[in-house]
Image 1 (cartoon, helix red, strand yellow):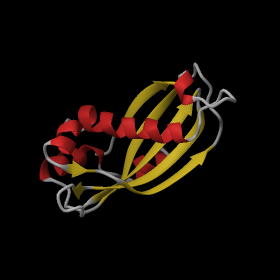
Image 2 (cartoon, one colour):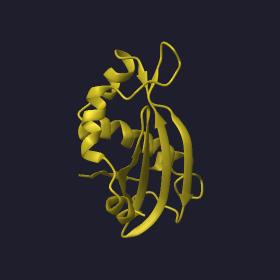
Image 3 (cartoon, helix red, strand yellow):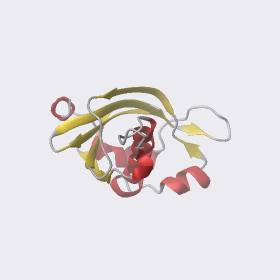
Image 4 (cartoon, helix red, strand yellow):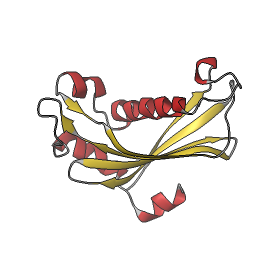
Length: 146
């Protein structure tokens, strides 16, 4: 079974550049917030606890973004996160931003679980791996989001 995690985001003044459109690095901030929300609400894994108490980080080690159309202050874009791969210590995700049926941006990311203590990658912890099962990719679900 595969599923996605969605969240609407209202574009605010603070997201925009002087031209009145989203300044592209703000999309990366939005995607990071989406990942945190996905952990907390979708996976039911406390992200703050994972960082602070468990000392497990989730850095982006690979990032690809495509910006299709500008977004403006006042619009609401729907962010959709799909898992594309689950490895021993990493997950691949694809995030799409849509507004009124139009793609605004797409981001492919590889996130690696790492120990803050060793600074090295670690196997995905068991409780997180179990929670990820509901988001495990299937070819049909990935194709539906491309």
